[in-house]
Image 1 (cartoon, protein in one colour):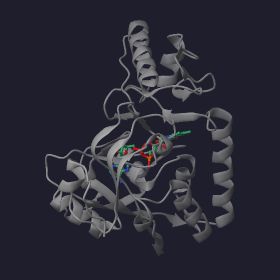
Image 2 (cartoon, rainbow, N blue to C red):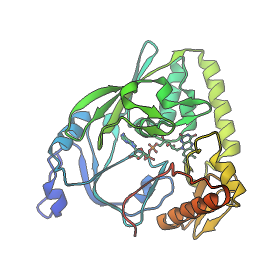
Image 3 (cartoon, protein in one colour):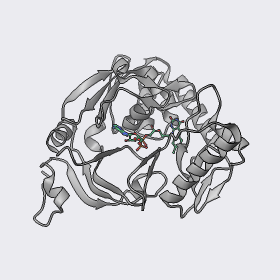
Length: 308
Ligand SMILES: Cc1cc2nc3c(=O)[nH]c(=O)nc-3n(C[C@H](O)[C@H](O)[C@H](O)COP(=O)(O)OP(=O)(O)OC[C@H]3O[C@@H](n4cnc5c(N)ncnc54)[C@H](O)[C@@H]3O)c2cc1C
């Protein structure tokens, strides 16, 4: 049971007793792909969905809550995050099948889910092997790659809402669009999902996953500190990378942040970037693209926390 110790900060002393763990002033820079950002005032790792529900029901509503996945589409700002930051751990990593339906915890990595499906001979989810993130992040972002999107194979998702109620929402209720989930209630957290696959040959699925890995290796700076696509593709069929390239922003650098030479919609931390460098670079790219093409790019990368 994690409760407030005698010397606890005023925030910790206001939080409910939980079975999971609280940590004050927790470094977040090691938990995101860019390796930037300040600390969480309090980091909470729930034990399971019931523990998370209890926390949500009893956490005073004026305390801000920020949900993080594995930080592969995220900039944590240099000033850190006030309030409680939640990350899912071991209690959210179950994965099982019922026929061609896969039940998976939101803390499972996409690659793990894709490998499970491959071994079980369930096709249709191999695209997830090309999206480095957690199932929770894929549900929140409607992650997609190689012609498939999370919402296309989702049946329903389990959520814990801000009042602590654990319930399932259908894919229709979640109201998905390109890289957007419109139906998740404000402050709710995904804790699991049921996906529908189709029967397939493990060898064929493995082959497809190898093709995906090869395509990523050739086109994305996957060994860099990056956050995936910085901007969404704008409506009307235009590609964000092309607009960025045409505006002369390939390789553009601010401080330690750079638009990748390899894939110019990917931003990279070349070594010593701060979150402020990354965000300033993104804003400069938006400005130049707007000036060049008249199109204002929309951030795909989520930015959380306060400026340093
Ligand atoms: C090299 C690289 C390649 C990438 N390629 C692709 C790609 O091809 N296609 C693609 O779609 N994306 C891609 N991405 C982006 C990223 O992997 C996806 O957006 C992924 O789904 C994010 O998951 P995450 O767990 O890292 O979430 P985070 O980045 O930690 O969070 C992203 C958002 O999801 C929310 N969130 C996370 N977990 C939950 C939860 N359990 N409940 C509610 N909200 C939650 C967070 O609050 C945040 O707003 C790539 C990233 C990298 C680094």
